[in-house]
Length: 202
Image (cartoon, rainbow, N blue to C red):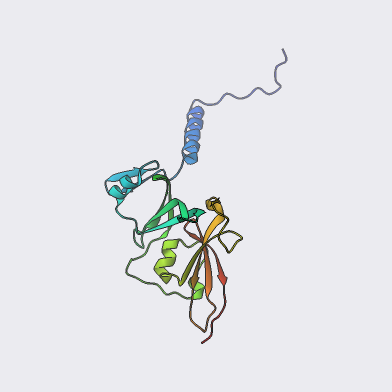
């Protein structure tokens, strides 16, 4: 039997323990970072019912919907609800996504804000990646809301199912006759794009 020219060195006894610890740390990093959220003394986790989350954490500060289907007799049908919890300016907002009444995902948004502090709303304040809650807090309700299928301005043929990745909301903010209005496209509760519209004179 041919022996290798350079046999592998024997590891010190402490190195296998360090390797095991490193593997455990990598495994922990691979796990979902936000599988649970603490509300006071209670913990909510993915898989919980809407009722359980509401009982533990209270009413969310805002709920948005992810639309998927259009049916003539019922209108747009939502596949997913997105709940926002605003914990003030010193903490990150929590974003919870529900499907079929069960908590499917927990993530963090930007820093929160005081509910009674209304920010300015100028065209340049409309930014990509804002959450729907941040947009409403800064600029209030839009002048117009349209739910549409991507690439189409009209309603799809009926009945129709397009999936959450193909349906968006368009919010219009009108800043008066001296400015072009802005068309804000929202997808899954976040601002995806901000475009300049027309300018309506007196």
